[in-house]
Image 1 (tube, rainbow, N blue to C red):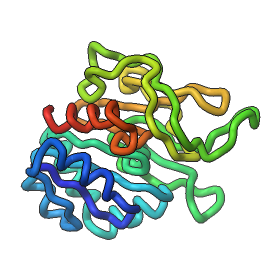
Image 2 (tube, rainbow, N blue to C red):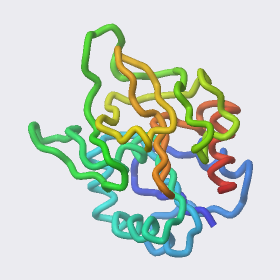
Image 3 (cartoon, rainbow, N blue to C red):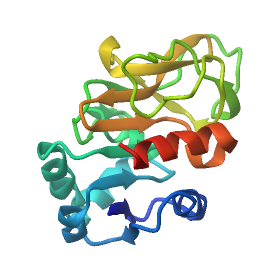
Length: 208
């Protein structure tokens, strides 16, 4: 069974529809206890890092997610669910403070910097590069320069090279668009909104 977590971070109708194409063994839940029953977990959502972590902590999901990972069961984070996998973020309502993430993957979430050659947020279709086809679990069948759908203003920095299984280029820099560390996986883009190739990623995760 796949537990898709409802922690108040956006409309996930597209994700539920995408998952239902490949299995009926899933549950959209706001109950941490359901994670213990699950073989896999999907952590989706849009919005702000500080609100996402506040909701995860207050709901009790944070501890349940960490217990799930200790059992080496697969987890897929999407968009804000991807960003909270990392150590911390400066996307907060309190200037100068950092918000702690789940700390499942090394790296820090920071706003795009550099020359203003592109608009922020990074919104729309963009390419994946440097896909590690030999080590990836969720990018099987996905080729370099495949387009995925992004919408975000912050990105991971300081990520271990071994954990980044695909990168993207935007705002004059390259950032990790996909990470995979043990049973922890995540995509900065929305696979459920990325046409057939995005659906392939969801299918790959379900079949792990």
